[in-house]
Amino acid sequence: MGELLAFVALILFSANIIITKMAAARLNLNLGFLISVGVNVLFASFLFLIQVLFFEGGIVDWNTKGFFLFLSAGLFSTYLGRWFFFETIDKLGPTRASAFQVSNPLFTTIIAWLFMGEKLGWMDLSAIILILLGLFLVSYISQSSVKREIAVSREPLGMQSVNEFSFKWLLQSGVLLAFLSSFSYAVGNVVRGAAIQNWNQPILGGILGALLGFLLHVATNKNTRDFWGQIRKSDSTGVLLYVISGVITISAQISVIASMRYIPISIANLITLSTPVIVTPLSFILFKNQEGITYRTIMGIILVLGGICFIVL
Image (cartoon, rainbow, N blue to C red; front, side, top):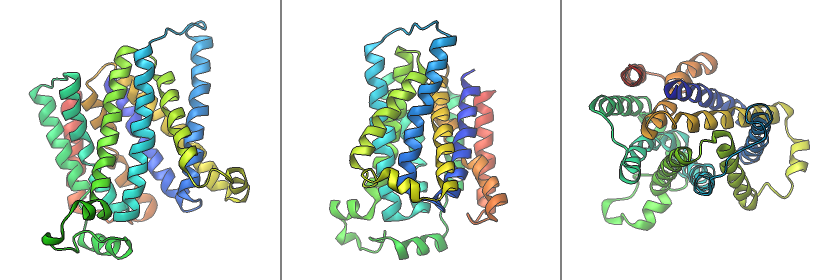
């Protein structure tokens, strides 16, 4: 059951990447993000209403620890993780920013082991190593991509000598922000796993995390003041795509939260992060190989699929 829910989340997250790529070409990413997170809250609330009215008879048990854990997950994932990630894109460019996210499953596994006492068998560990290697190959950055993104980044990575290396450079280069993004997502994943173990309410948990993330983004996003005015002026197709993105992302988050009730947190996270397996061939078909798919990419996809098969079997 847990693997099936994680696979559903994987498919939904993969679809969202494609939709977001199409939406970003039509509408400002910051405005689109507000739309998406707002729809997260609305659609999850609709699902929760259906759950209460038709499946739980209007009664929902209360768990204070689970409540605050789900809120904390919203802080780490919906707000900090995405904020650091967008800042990383600004400094490093999208290709290198995405490559750093390969460290997310590793952080999640370590944190779950240290704080949740989560133990994995040798087959699971072998599968994790196989999938991480595959994700690394899929996320490999070609020299042409590096040069292209260095040209547009504000503080080129690797342009300074070792003698000039400092904490300030680490921050300005975007490397620290990239790892903070990956680490924040990992903490959020582990917190969600702890929350669902204490309070089996994945839909309500998704609402709480999305709501806190939305409120924090509203308070800090520069597009908030004239939100409705910008919506009216925006491309209607772009707005619709971000609305669809909001429905898909919260559905995926609820699925992965529910999966953590049945399988280890690190395994659920690893499956849902294997989006390149689906996104890469779809991108090749839809966008005419703009991502630069190579034999290395194909080998990485095969390794990821092999690792997932080990986990399932």
